Structure formats: C-alpha cells, structure tokens
Length: 157
Image 1 (cartoon, rainbow, N blue to C red):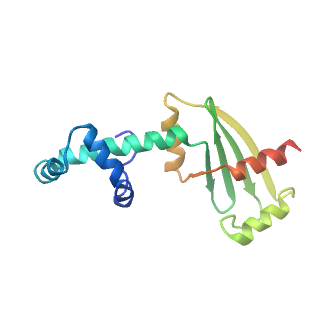
Image 2 (cartoon, one colour):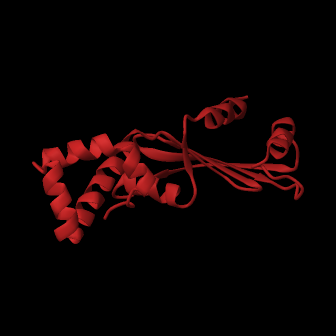
C-alpha cells in the first residue's frame, strides 16, 4: 500500500465510489460478497487499492496544509514545483494556539517579540503526493489556505 487504508467510516462514506470501483473490475455485489467470505485477503487488497486511488485523487488536488500545535504553526502551500512553508513559533509559554484565546492573542500580537517567523521552500522528492501524505501523517490537515494567504499578505508589507 502506498498511503493508508481508509477508515471504516471513510469507506462507508465512499460506498457509491467503492461500488463503481468494483464495477470497473467487473465485480458484482454478489461476487464481492463471495470474495469477502471466501477470500478475505483478496477483499483486503481491493480495499487497499481503492484507498490508494482515493488518496491519490485527494493529494493531487490539495494545495494547502496546516499543522498547528500549542506554540507552533506550520502552514504549507503545495505548488506544482515545490512546498512552501510559513512557520510561526510563539515564545510566550502561556499561549496555546489551538484555543480561541491563544489564537486571538496571536492575531493581536503577531508583530511582537514573542513571535518568530520562518519561511522556506523545498522541492518535492520522487513523488510529490508521498511528500504531501507525509505531512498529513505528521498531523497536518487540508485547508483552503486562508491562514497561509493572510501570512503572505502581512509578510509582503
């Protein structure tokens, strides 16, 4: 498997797509039932292949990722050629960026000495989707990029 098997909930949510996936392999509902009962390992392989296909589709489209912890923010813009990063470090030990209060503090104090910034970019490795997936495995979530774009604007001024 290239990525990660979809959870039971994700598979249930994608049930119509999974049926279409089986149909592209000429597997009917009855045949699928038989495969699950008599060849569970084959059924597992089909689910893995389907999971990879779904991940591949998602990763092809993802443009922005965010990984926000107590005192760090890593905001990624995934372009065609490279991964761009805005990194924020909060030096105030009383602040937790994951809370409304903490994030509010940051928005009011983003220019203070208690906030450090770093921006960087990095070329993709052999497979850019694998690079994107690694960030997700480390806790990043897919976003529309509003926070990254806000940073881009304040960094330009």
